[in-house]
Image (cartoon, rainbow over all chains, first blue to last red; front, side, top):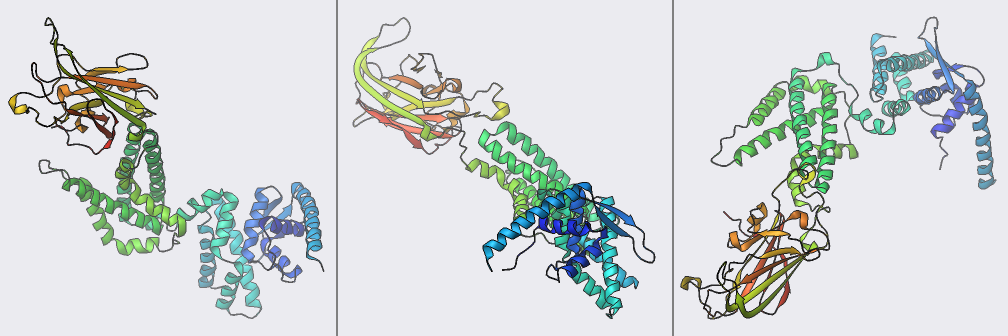
Length: 106
Length: 442
């Protein structure tokens, strides 16, 4: 039985990545895969509904940026609300993970 | 990147966004973002050594299922209900510029059907009893909503809506023909609906080669939604007989009426009319006590409940068994009502609750040999739960004759709905029970 991310968890991971710097969708999908050693290997397109949901909820802000020789990119950055949500979400996640670890044993 | 590869990637973006039901600006914004992703991924694979087509296929595969991502995007911008219905049923598949002329005719047929259904809804709401109005109204409202959605969807190239429209037109043809067949030999009915429907079907058949590609890009509708759509096509046609067959819990039934019959037989003064002194003779006094456990709620529907109407219950009496050796009617001797009218009163209040000789529609339910002076009308307003309405008949044989004591049959008709019938003899107390409807009075 493999653990699965729900929408909220996935959004939290995106907020965590965006706390480092602003990124665009393709970049976020690549970072998720690479930094989780491909354990989190979701279809790349699923990043976009999650990003749009975060934007709708005011947790991230998007902006278009021109790219020489390529299509425009839509960069996302954390808002103040997003930073607060990340702090709360991170704490909650750690408590949850700690509790789950305790239950699962060694 | 070749135009073919670009078209392939763009088709995936379009397919992804098709089910999301987005407004123009949001859709364009997302289309650019998703296309940028696919192009960049394609470039990465192409740089990594894959050929152009292979890189495109890999980029598309890694992007994920278009339907799932589209639905997720739909959930972001719409409610869950919207996503599970409108988001599936209404996405635009084909542009209006490619819309075949047959679609316009199909939509006209749907619009006509919508108006007729709306008219039926109004009638049901104002004329049907509350339970039936609720059930019928809900079914018709659901049908109207689905029809309105299908009306829009067929113009956007949705396959389900095309078949829905065709089914509606087929029903239009069948209903028109049925009305003509059942209109009776003395009525000439021209099935205009059928003729129009046949024209639309013929036009659609001739335009099939245009219609098929117009809807070919749409996703099939499956599961519960497909069942609901299919049910909504036939439900309005099946509604009238279905509603008539279903009992309405807001209306009283025969089980709510207790008809208690009693009869006393004696010799005593028989009234002979004004100015003539009573003469002693045989007398049978038949008493029918009608007690309702509960009464109808808005029995004549919402609208008709507020306008005066001659909707009364009826009851009647006839000789059930004149007894052995009875003098037959052919000899001019049978039991009959003397000059005194039967009385109809509310036993609780003593108030008059009816009249001699019913002319209400309910009298048609009584057996045809119970008519005219043998009937009484019972005022609907006088019928109240727990109250007993008592009808009393004094019945005598012809003056100066001695006849065997008869048994009488008493029949009660509630509106045009049900009959309760019982028989009673001298010194007996009996109870009526629900009876099948008799032949209507001509």
